[in-house]
Amino acid sequence: MANNSGTLMERSKYAMLKVAVPFVVFIGVGAYALTLWRKNSKVRPPLFKRSTSLALLHGGDVALQRLIDYHEARADLHKLDPAECELTVLLKDHERPDFRALTRIIAKLEMSGKEDRTIKILEDQIKDAQKKGKMHEAYEFEMLLVEMLIYKGDYEKALSRKCLTDDKISDARRPLFRAIIFLCKEPPKKKEAEPFWEKFCELRTSFGFPPVLKESVEETGIYKVGAKFDEFEKVVNRLKEDVKKAQERKSGK
Image (cartoon, rainbow, N blue to C red; front, top):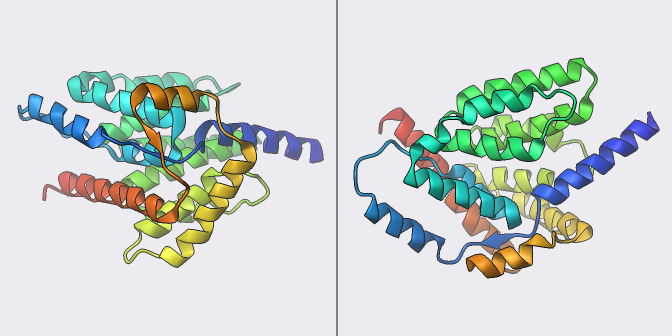
């Protein structure tokens, strides 16, 4: 039992390094996106960008890839069509699910507004993994579910998930997601969010920085901002607005 616990912790530390990397904001992305929008003035189906906003909080290569996917989709919405099929194919690999690839596909499904369908798939995967005693897989699927629930704006349900309260595993996504959720609430709960942001910074520092970040930042004109809560809050507010806009589009407002 102790050995299994140790293995789970090591895997989760690895996952955390891949996902919860240094906090960055994107200078010039807004102007670039606006330019693209003006060039493509025809009426088009809505392309949601909540996952792009959340990627700003993850930082590093996760955020860079999210932006690439987002701008490719703006140029050609059909690039999102295979996402659900890709998800089904990836989930068939029960021996070793590629959670990094799954994270990217989840973002594509969000961009196409398919979060309800994706939430159902993830809930089924969690139950299946738990039934088979694959607790690490269940944990990782649940983290993906929390992210999708944030996109949907279902903050209370996201906050109630077990993976966000399991303090036995050192995973920077946990305090990051909790800080985001508290700031997204109405009214925002800043006092509750700040300690989780500080914990996220602490864990992020403890596990170091991926070497890919420096080169990626220099090549794309993306600049790292100091780990300040007020900067974090600004990006969360951007995410919050994206969630509201997506909800309004779906409700036909």
